[in-house]
Image 1: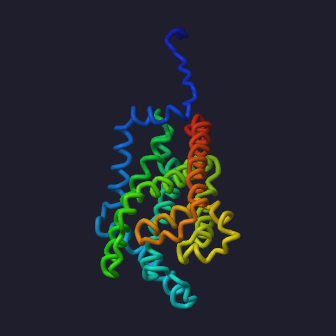
Image 2: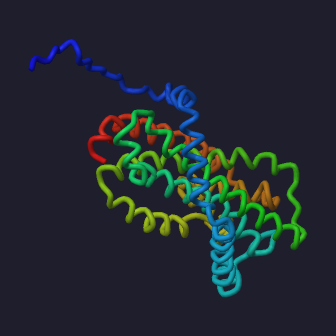
Image 3: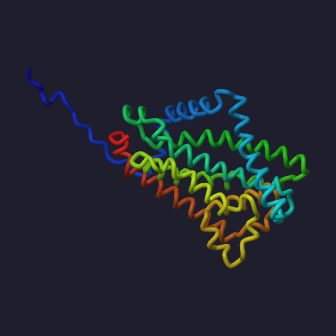
Length: 278
């Protein structure tokens, strides 16, 4: 039996430039909506359990930090009660970690989809961000309730909150894209990330105020981009403007953009190998 070589076609697709990613995501937006909605359904299929977990996790962490740093160590909390101050910092930190975990494991969790169907793979980690936003809104409702109880009222600065959320998204998504690409080749990163993030939790001003850091170390301390985000959250929600180290906030913005661009380019550069390796 003879085979006519003209019956076969070889299609070579060029690498997707980083600038065309948004265009590709928009072109496959229906798949993005489907993956995001699927993740939300899986996360909150048992609605009570899903919502309860979104409340219990920050609440339990807040209780531990308040007892250790507020009661035992007797650290200052500024204008707000210690528990409210901690919860205002836990919101951006858990928002960051939730995005990083979900995006970093997104490709490994969707191996059959990656290996069988062509589409821009970056859609998978980007869709995973939606679940983290849902968790954030639940935790934000908890914080808002505590603020009402203690009589802490945010001012007009709360309008700046989306900007600080954007910094957290860029930092976590950029890091998550980098980890997702590495996870395809080296599955050890799945187990390594919790240790790194646990270490980062204590290096970030979550359980304490960044005002405790000596002035001579503030610039170096601010090389952690989440420092500016956490201080920004406390400022816009609790009025703690004195906490904001403006050079550090500028560093957070620059680093978040740089991390996102690096993670996106690294992801795109390795995208062609995902289907073969995974």
